[in-house]
Image (cartoon, rainbow, N blue to C red; front, side):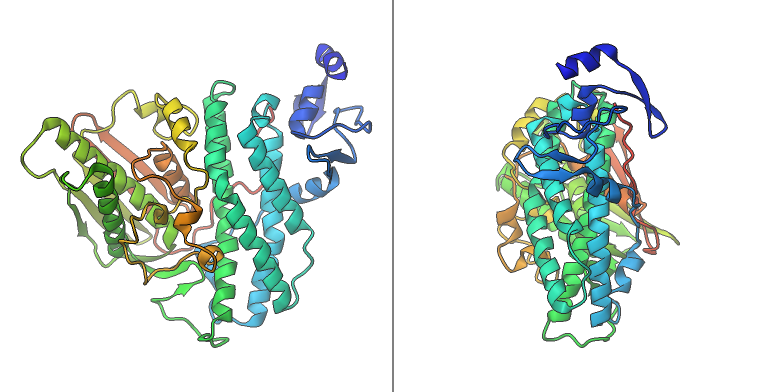
Length: 467
């Protein structure tokens, strides 16, 4: 009755400097899945002191408001490495307290963004599940006291590890929720929301995994406190000198194995040639660059295979050409194929999470992927890559392989590779563009910062306009 009465009056009020409808629906939008207590704000219709979650626990409004008022503090790759250079106990403790205070602030802003979605969207079971995961994580981290000892740090690392594993469901859940809500909101708004959520997710995993990796380094029997690392080493998750040529070759090996597994042993696989500035290197998080390059190569190789099969050609398929260009501030990868280009009907939806001609098929495929970390390791075929020289994420190394935590059948197409790759590229102030020549092929241009001095590109506060 209350909602009907308020909906009929549709009184307007001012909220944070913007017009907003004071309706019961808006009250539910702001706090999805929660029961209203009698203590209502007469002006905005929002609960003033506390709200009850659907599982019966009370969630204080003031706690979230307090953290939403704080801005996230973006960092660069260079700053990310500061704690790890000449690592000592005090620097590790400083890193722990940065993570302890930064994670709940970043989660709080995304919770507020979700609270401002329309009720019909936020009650989608997939998005609602993500909301609950986020709120539980926020509640855990906000209650942690200052880290003062190594024992305190170990407790923090345990909580971080559990959350990283638990949140492997976030990407497929969000993607399914966005696809199911595609007709309920402006697709551009949904894509903006998804982009913001995913970029924030990357930012949280970066600082969390970096701290876990530094802790693992500190606890290693081979570690000497204060010792400086060589340029060929990792500082936490950051590879100090990431070789562009090595990245291409590792991803090419993975993509070739994947294509062979998907298409069968008798299908010709195009070669992947690398030219240009083969000595180019840069500081980067290896899993990020591998994911982007791997997805681009995967698309190109599969397009060439399919075109070659349609033409029933006796000759070898045309190679995929990768050119590396090293400039003063950037490294640019150009990946060129002759796979026939992208159909014109698909071009408007190339970067969309929420809309496209194959949305229903994508939704069905996502249902087969309960967990997803968005790394190239998910696509490895029977450990053919031999990544003994590379790092395995700390949060899963002592328990089980990443493939058992998050994997997908090799031929399953989710329609997320390109938009998610662009999120990764733009996160460290890079960019990703595609040029398609229909009937011929595609050129993909990936530009990344060579100096590691660009801040992570994230929304520092809750930014989504309420609907």
